Length: 159
Image (cartoon, rainbow, N blue to C red; front, top):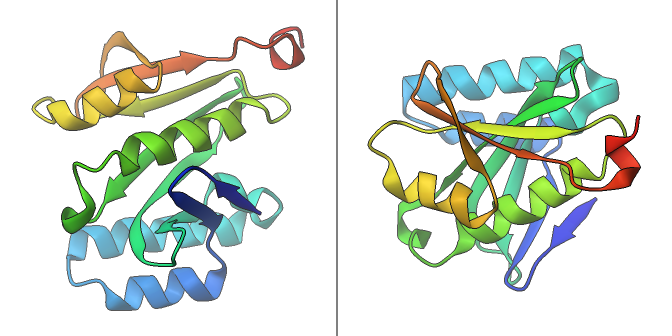
């Protein structure tokens, strides 16, 4: 599956793509996080999309960044995380990718809410969430303030 936007193509990474990506990393914290993500995929292979890295690329194929969901929760919520390579920041790619992925997520059966968390001083990331229709929840998570967006469609909201 590929989500296409005006400038981007976003696809769910395979096990091989995730393994190669992890092998190229140098930051130990990121390596640990990506390995946990891959293990989540392997442990929940029937729900791969909810645990996998989603590769964000320009339509020409250049890597821009990635995003992920952090599992599908029993209460119908999912959490999204994202990152854009430094050289591609400030071009609207994060907003475009998050907006497309959240729209996809909220169309999936049983998904009612998408959440995200940013570091307290990461105003750029908070602005991405605001542009995508997220609102502050008033809850402070491990990393900082939490935001959410709820499903507005009758398809998911009347289950």
